[in-house]
Amino acid sequence: MHELSIVASIVEIAEEHVRKAGASSATHVELEIGELAGVEWKALEFAWEVAVKNTVLENAKKHLVRISGLAKCAECSEEFNMRTLFDPCPVCGSYFNVILRGKELRVKALTVV
Amino acid sequence: MAGYQPGFFLSEYVWRLPAFPEDLSVPGGFYLLTLDTSRKFKQSLEELNYNIMCGICGCGQEDGTVTIKKVGEHTSSPADAPVAHMHKHGHHHHHHRHHGNEIGNEKVLQIEQDILGKNNLLAERNRGYFEAKNILTLNLVSSPGSGKTALLERTLTELKDEIPCYVIEGDQQTSNDASRIAATGAEVVQINTGKGCHLEADMVNTAVKKLSPSENSLLFIENVGNLVCPAMFDLGEAVRVVIISVTEGEDKPIKYPDMFHSSQLCIINKIDLLPYVSFDIEKVKEYAGQVSHITEFIELSATTGEGMDQWYDWLRARVRPQR
Image (cartoon, rainbow over all chains, first blue to last red; front, side, top):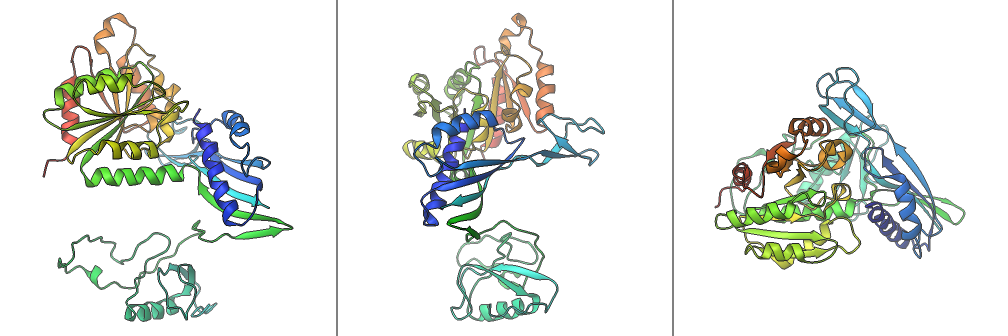
């Protein structure tokens, strides 16, 4: 249930930026989460309800941008869509892959009032 | 902005000037300069004894060499006479100011901040401390009951006269494990995470202050028994060690890929029980190899001592020679 820690970190980031902007709360938060980042969206939703109570994010709508996984095969240089960390290269079958994208875990934007 | 001539050159370069003459612009921000004006700026700044650093990648020298020296130490490196270094950077995300879009009372802040950024920064601080003091730090992760504490007990008992050893114990509740470790004579700090399912860098930071490990030593961090959550949290360790016992399923690496992906060493424990279980060691290595291509393996039994020598040799090879 590390998603609770993740939400707590999002709240912390939001609190800081709301304060810096001289605002009182956030109405919208945009998150970028890679499919290989190890975050379960349903668990995050569940943790969200609890963790945003009495914070600047309590009434904020969250918008998720899912970033699909992209890997490059170190054997044949094929770039392919990676859904799990143990997907082999679809061309040569090698597991010797380098992840190019999909580990993101970011607060992209925050709308404050 | 002073010195900025639009269209003078096609290429533009972004420089961050840590300090800047007040009559030119606001200190500490980003400045767009043309090639020609940036040369002029650099010359004028050098006369004023200002340092220039590239704001994107931090590079400050054309030949890419890094010199680290003590005060008064002489080197003939060209780094002593830095030359303007130009390269083109693509779009960047170093927003040091809020780029706000105001819609009515609402303001959109593009913050682009890593959610785990705070933990990762603190982990790097820990890592720097460990490196400077030559403390080899291992983050031991596994499911509950794979034998982390038993492995540590035997390791500490047999290695403590050779290398000073310290332990940080992470559990949700009780200091039972810390008591077992303390019985070996090693210094130990227990972290109880309460409802938390993993250790974080700030907990380790606090625990290390309590422990104050000596230089040229070994620090074992026994994480909370959990193959999921600790995978996401860097503690500042040099090596992440995942432990699996032969009484578990050999498909653990692909059931919990994040943990095996982020570990560099896999210890297969309880090999004395192999005759009684249907555990295929080659199969587990094959699965782990699918998730990570850098994992090393050590097979051992913390109960009988079989294979422990290989583990000790692995540790000895990584604690740098004592100065």
